[in-house]
Image 1 (tube, rainbow, N blue to C red):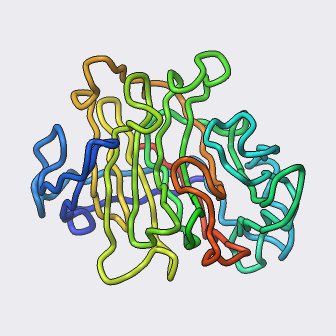
Image 2: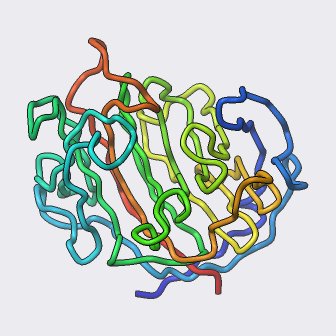
Length: 290
């Protein structure tokens, strides 16, 4: 598969919104942290070559392509460290094509495997990894207290280096109770868990659960840029790493799509949280710079 596209100055006349750092509070700036980007500044044109993609074409009810995705299976509070409440399965009830070119990850309120909810977590680990490039997905996210959708990446050396030394890139992470707020983050040694390097974008007069949006990172040797709908809202460079930290974004990463229920980041669902909850993924694409 080979395809290219160019990001032009017209596409990339971005405005910057706001950033916040971990639990230290929310600060509003019109400059990116640790760089010289200004509101409305043009960025260089780039030519990208498609290296991997999934358009999720197929029969309704079919599982995602096993040549592109694997499943994590088990209780969310057993091995993932976030006190999540769901059991991740590989059942079509929790992850299946819809017949219209989408993958749907569904969180269900049900007793299963000792948990009170089920959902799915898909990954390209041991199937596809890449160092540097543009990683993007077009997604409609779910909504509700205690719902935690994410599109993210982990270093492929996680089995030997362990987390957070392997590195983590959160391309898109949302709290279901904040349907207009997007977070893009890095976790690594010295800035992990509740204290990542995080950028925040607030969607004005709309919500992410009411339509599709394109979430992306462009990852280079010295920085990672975070985008929503081709708008650059956050940049993290090597210079932004804290003195006790380490830049660990110099090796291949794999991708993850999941919807968690509960956990430290979002809290438990409440009586106002409706189920089932669905995250709809139109496509996932990965590019390298030509």
